[in-house]
Amino acid sequence: GKTYALADFKGKAVVLEWVNPNCPFSDRHAREHTMTELHKKYGQVVWLGINSTNPDHRDFLKPADYQAYNQKNGINYAILYDESGQVGHAYDAKTTPHMFIIDPQGKIVYNGAIDDDPSGRKAKAERANYVDGGLAAELAGKKLDPAATKPYGCSVKY
Image (cartoon, rainbow, N blue to C red; front, side, top):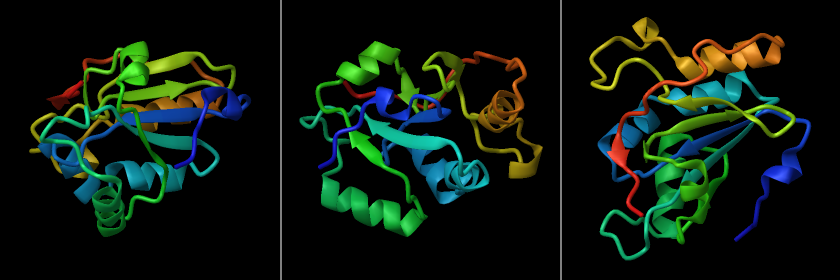
């Protein structure tokens, strides 16, 4: 029920995570606490989940069900509904998850996958977590490498 604007967070790094709990890729990361652990590790970073699923699509999860899902998976950052898909299209979000790191000036400095393990077969510690590396670099004032990767997951159900 609350409205957010990226401009509200000027001066802070922001992570945008496209989510859909009915997507096996997004759900796996929720169950493994991939994003919630990063959110905790980088407490000074604003973390926002965005669900651009069309409300008429069978994968759409109602807010009350989403709250239960978040509680079950320890997700304590805001999940924003983008029912029109306007925000998703503006960022060209393709998959769930699709990750973006926004620098304190509002510029996208990373766009892509959460990690290098689309199949989920690697042990968590063996994965190259691009967002973790990107946030570490951004907060240290260094250039992100890679600054872009190919996102994986289910297509956003616009």
